[in-house]
Amino acid sequence: MHINIQSASSDNSGLLIIPVLSGNYQEILQDKLPGYQLNASLFSGKKDSSYQFELNGRLILLIGLGEKTEVGSIEKSFRRILSKNKEVVDELVTIDFSKDFSAELVESALVGFQLGEYNLGFFKKKEESSKDFSALQVNIRSTLSDLEKTIARAVKIAAAKMEGFKLVDLPPNVLTPAYLADWALKQGAEHGFDVTIFDQEKAKSEGLEAFLAVARGSAKAPKFIIMEYRSPEAKVHLGLVGKGVTFDTGGLNIKTQGMVYMKSDMGGAAAVLAATQLIASLKLPINLTSIVPAVENSVDKDAYLPSEVIGSHAGLSIEVIDTDAEGRLILADGLSYLVKNYQVDQVIDLATLTGSSVGTFGYECGALFSNSDSISDALRAAGMQSGEKVWPLPMWENYRKEMDSEIADIKNYHGKPIAGAITAAKFLEAFIHEHPSWAHLDIAGVAFGDSEFAKTKSGTAFGVQLLLKFIENQL
Image 1 (cartoon, rainbow, N blue to C red):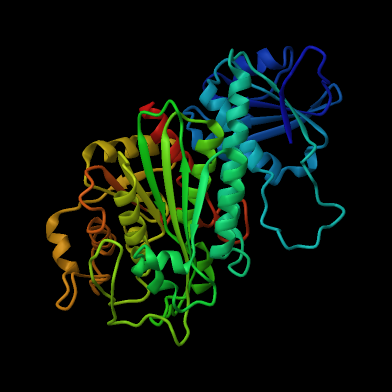
Image 2 (cartoon, rainbow, N blue to C red):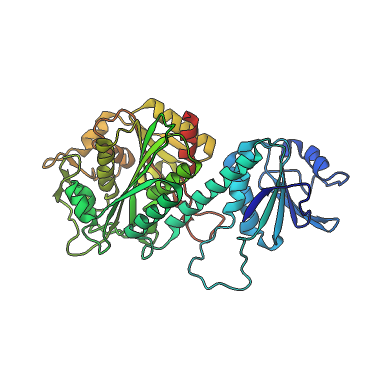
């Protein structure tokens, strides 16, 4: 797909898309289609509505965006065009934005339009009738003065989000810890960030004992992935950690339902990997260190056992109550390694960690935990702005007592059907070495799920635009 600003000599054939706000739909239509009259009962710009017709031999598609313009809903409206209306798109598309569209709204529309190209058929036999949009020409009309910059940003954001989709959607026999390591190396070479990969031997010498314990039951070797992006103009150093369990059987506490969806248990890693790609490609003026502990939690004779006591990078002993509470173990080592080895100003981890967070918020937002009101408030605000919402839950010290162990420094699960997301966050807090600005995002309900764009559950790339907005709000 090639997106360009429409010039005076541009071809005026092909599909014309006009996005319409319901508050002044008549004014927009009169401006874009002078002399054309449209009955309001057919189309009035209502949210999630569309209307297509032919005018003077040209196909016109009107997209209704409603009165309140939210970036998330605009992205979704434009994603529908290629995802659901492939038959009306040929070789050329023109999108004509009215003066009501700010750079942010145009960007969201263009991101959504590109996301419509994504589909899950990685291994399907390609049919001759299937459409390939790689050569599609997209002309943009807009009064924005910085339109070229907006288009360039939208292309990079969409590329990162589609990588986030794909990382979650690929099956676990393809997307292994080694695949994630290779992905990071490839993106680092392309976008300009350094990548270091610890194998089992190196991880052992670094004391990443909790990380290695989870990996023991799998034939697939674990990879501890470190990505470092540096800017000469940076004033802030951000640290990210993403849970990278490429498949989660539950270990010896094996899952009894829903295991087919556990390829998604690296949704936090997908967000961190894609966000790192995006931040580097945009050349944002920050320093970024991202860590992805990548493992498969499987079952064999070497798998770690319930009631084992294992070590950790932070030096704390951990009593394993439940081998299905594995994500917090690899995050514990990731967080500890990050804080001890890098002078980061802020730390954020993202993980598909608990069903408890889904029980609290459903599929509407992620659960936010933090020891800092400022980073919590900034993430909540960025979530509302980006459409990737997160909401805070308490971190009161009384919850920490739930994780006390008789035999070790801490246990990995309290074994109760209450406050599961909170107690998991309190477990992680024990491994941040009292860093004063840390946030944990439990994205179990929003990283993977049902949508109108696939017949099965699929990846959402939740966290990519949230992190982008969080960073840019501080610049």
